[in-house]
Length: 234
Image (tube, rainbow, N blue to C red; front, side):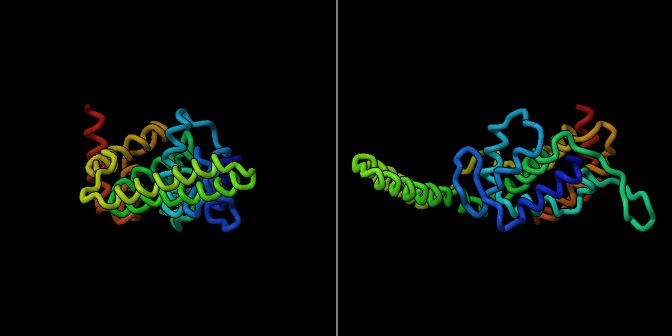
């Protein structure tokens, strides 16, 4: 499968209402999850557990937003136009396209911790719903002991959720609060995934576009390019 075919297939999977939405690791199904089938379309990542955890935190419409941001062309990073009519472009291909898209999404959504706090808390609702399904299974086996254990687990989850919501201070993971490091993280990711010959200006323009797409903050490409230059001196 070519990079362009891979990109189009993943986007189609993400946008299809017929796709079974399965969360990696947990196996739970919920509307915002990334289709599990996508993980079988690319080479195994260096850290599959980390990548799967990233996908649990990401929502599919965020991934779609990255893919439709305009920085991609033929499954790679779009460079300068090759024709006056801008019908074709120089393309710089990623080492692992799916991994790049998902990690980029993770970096970008980390810039909005307040918005995503409610989403993270909603994980308890999904877990509680899953317990209800397990109770039905236990009931079909007429296992009262197992059924009662599941009731206790459900009650404990509800108590934990209630306790977290009542907290006056939201204590999110440190990574979600490090707004100033988002650009550096994206620069590092682009550098790891792209050929060494990829021009800094192409990378800086892409990062600027992504930040604008997610309404995080406005940074001109030149400012990002200067930061790339400084990083080379370290």
